[in-house]
Length: 170
Image (cartoon, rainbow, N blue to C red):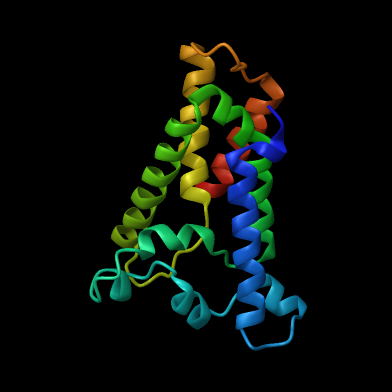
């Protein structure tokens, strides 16, 4: 499967496009500081997950939109890398429909978990969705391998994935 035709590439492109919009909508000149840290107020306006808004103002759609926003360019780069490197393999192993279902479900569950753990913390990023998809991929890769076009992860890929998942959990 070509990476350019994958859902992962589409999701990464969408996240990058939203990030570029964040930079322009901030109203501030693009500097190292604005690249590294997005203003929280702007993230709230664009759909970040924040319990006082998401729950108390009944804006539940934020449980979807927050996963396309990113706190900074490093955050975006790490998520995009994981999507582009492992997403196509996960799609092949899981199938496109299951991939999308797990991506959305784990993003929403991650948003709800964020609210439960720290309701006054603003949360953004695709990490929960990516972790969910990669967890399902690891499971299928090592235990189920039913699909003809799926491939088993090699040890270096598995280690890299586990490092990414550990970083995301931190």
